[in-house]
Image 1: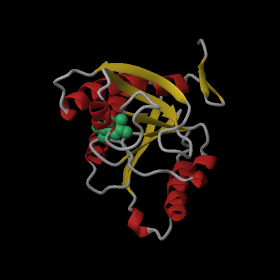
Image 2 (image 1 turned 30 degrees about the horizontal axis):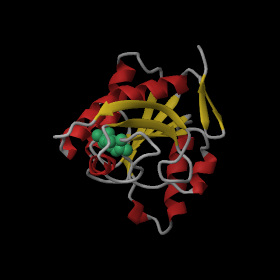
Image 3 (image 1 turned 90 degrees about the vertical axis):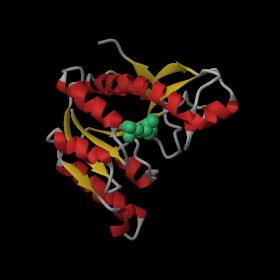
Image 4 (image 1 turned 180 degrees about the vertical axis):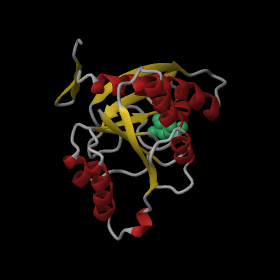
Length: 201
Ligand code: GRF
């Protein structure tokens, strides 16, 4: 499959995807990395790996749809089969999602539906849960609400800081996201309503 990754920041998940492809654990071609932030370090990671990387500035467009049309044009040009959001901090509108329905994934640092939105790790600490984790899900119009593909638990310790919990969750994310992308690449994911079925190979 042809893969595109959208980022806004550091891109450690992007790096995990790049490494997994290189190691043959993910059978995909990473065709491009797109960022809505000029200084996203993920763009440097892509450049170092020899992958086309593009900053598309939302400020250059006078509507959300205009921006998303530009994104869609890039995806079209490269025949992209799957978009993986990896720390991409913009909510995609129904205009975009409908044209790429069932082909957009996101990773979130909690066990959804707990703690959607920003600062999921802080939310988990403040709530006092003993277990959090990460979730890979298909993207729908909501904020972190789409059908769940894979989840992994991570313990929360009583002396945790936000940073320690975040880094423990991040390590798990780096295993889980490539795994989900590989399932998609093997055509083993079926969405039925809220449920994602993982078919046997
Ligand atoms: C991750 O925690 C991911 O779950 C969330 O954004 C963060 C991205 O981190 N959606 P990175 O840029 O991949 O390091």
